[in-house]
Amino acid sequence: MTPFKTIAAIATIAILTLPAWGGDVLTIKIPRHSELTPVQKLNREGVEAVKKQRYEKAAKLFYKAYLYDPSDPFTLNNLGYVSELQGELDRAHKFYQLAGEQECSATIDDSNAKGLKGKSMQAAFENLQDVPMRVNRMNVTAMDLLSQGETRQAIALLRQAAGPGSSESIYAE
Image 1 (cartoon, rainbow, N blue to C red):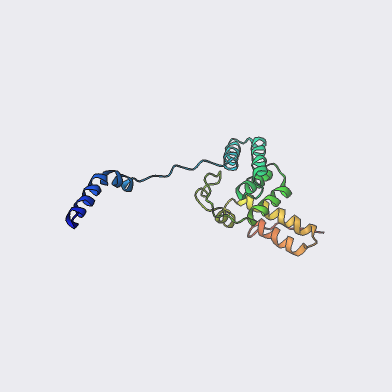
Image 2 (cartoon, helix red, strand yellow):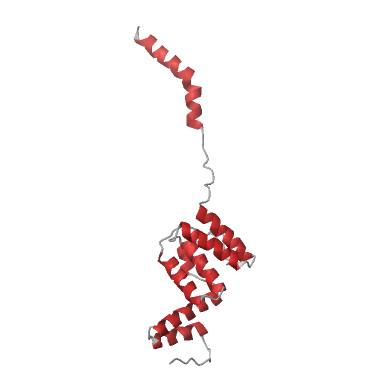
């Protein structure tokens, strides 16, 4: 076989197989939206329950998510929030503290607080805009400080929670 015939044979084979081969190269596969994990599903259901003010149901869903993954910062934060709504400030403080200790770069998909959707979980912890909840957290922290005998720090924190220009007196024994 001459070199010309060899090149012609290779070219013919390439031309005949080009459509099949080219189809694979030009195929663009768009990834499907990933399925939610059981923890994510439970947290979403819990957030919906909170929006409907069904706090007992929300708490059950968040605790179930906690059993799946006790270090999930979204679950810990949700447990803190629902505990706070139920008046369990010590428990809320512990959950918030645990949530803040977790490393997380995930973004918030849904929230009852305006402006948090789409932000990173860490940014949400750093920039809490919900003033009443922030004041509650400061009060819980102040109570912890008082129980540890840190009276001056507790008073300073309570003054900060009361806000600028507050004329309320703060007593501690």
